Length: 180
Image 1 (cartoon, one colour):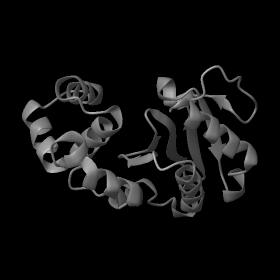
Image 2: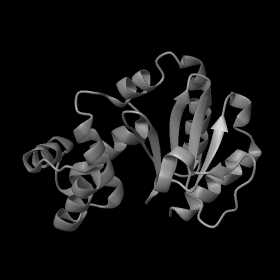
Image 3: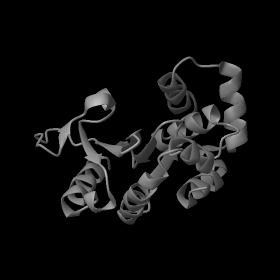
């Protein structure tokens, strides 16, 4: 399990008033149809911050699947793309101790106060990195969000570890700073 996620789960009782298991039990009793409904419920009815609410809802849906299991499933048959993901993760966690990494069924979210980046092993030969940088013009490399829709403003296609270069890191840093 990702160390940041372990820390978040360990701090959950102090920061939110309940353990992860207690939150999951509460959400299961309510059976929300949409992710956003459950997040809004936790925020409005229980005063949980967005980062904790989002993580609780994701982990409640993925109960029985550890973050490592989710990554293994995402990268099955695409294992050669993991070094790209690993480079992104190392860089993102170097930006600050307020980053939460949340693996989901098909993607991994990088969250500060809000999600600022999303990684998706899109094909057998490519990762898509979604970034949220409002007002940033697109380029040949920094495309419009494409399949990410409104979750991100831009997409960058990554095929090899060398694609995680200074230009990309600058865009990720800008997205991180905007999410604070």
